[in-house]
Image (cartoon, rainbow, N blue to C red; front, side, top):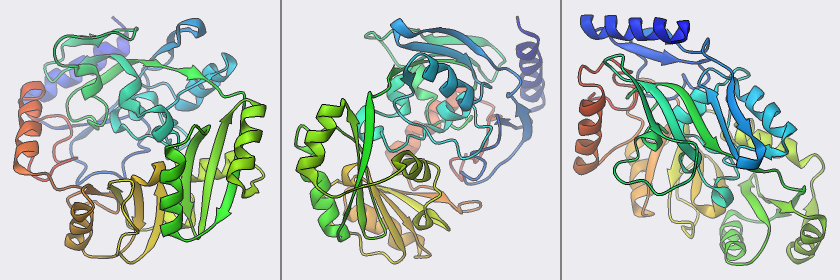
Length: 348
């Protein structure tokens, strides 16, 4: 067994015996997210490196501490990419943090989320047991898919050691167009586009303009641009990087993430509004009261998460049934509650 894994195992078993909480940490790029950060830091960034990558198989397996920048470089050499386009939110973001956060970028509506691409994981549970779930191929699985459960768990269920992800070919070409319009018209336009055979890999409405990224062959993109109109954006990749990494002015401050029906009209909330994923994702930088934001999300058939500025505030509100399910999962995988207590929920 690798010496780093042995050290991690010993730390977990000691913490479990003493009932002392641990906070699993890669680079810390997602430390802004959560209700509260508790416990001694368990560093996993030292367990790094690509284990297996065969471009023809469309699967990459790497250790959790591997920087995303290294993953991107290796995949680029093979003409491939992480299709969920995960944000880094920091220069040293790791693959483990990518999976544990479950955050997906602008390409999510077209290609899928982080969870959709997780094939298998190797983890250490709260007893220090070395477990493997899933595998390295896409197949139907009987029973509970524990590997995908790790996506979005934020280190509250187990220590991710390794992950196998499905990857996809990079597009032959990409171009971005910009159309000036109101938010209401942008939402209607995105929904119309979603029902047409267009090579759109990302959409974003910000500051009175709708942006669309076209991905595919040069001929396909040229035909789509003729249909969509608008103005070409120079260095479009820089714009989408700003969207993904939250560098846009409209994504600063106390930031809420609302998942709603894509056809939902502009929400009646003060602040800066940014719309992604064909209208289903609304980012709102606002100082509005929490009750007001949650009610607006419920009225739109969705839910709200306090994405930034949440330290000490509940990041989400779960109904009784969902809360009970979360408790049962936590109890099953971490009965002593040593991994990231109160990171996602104020109660546990």
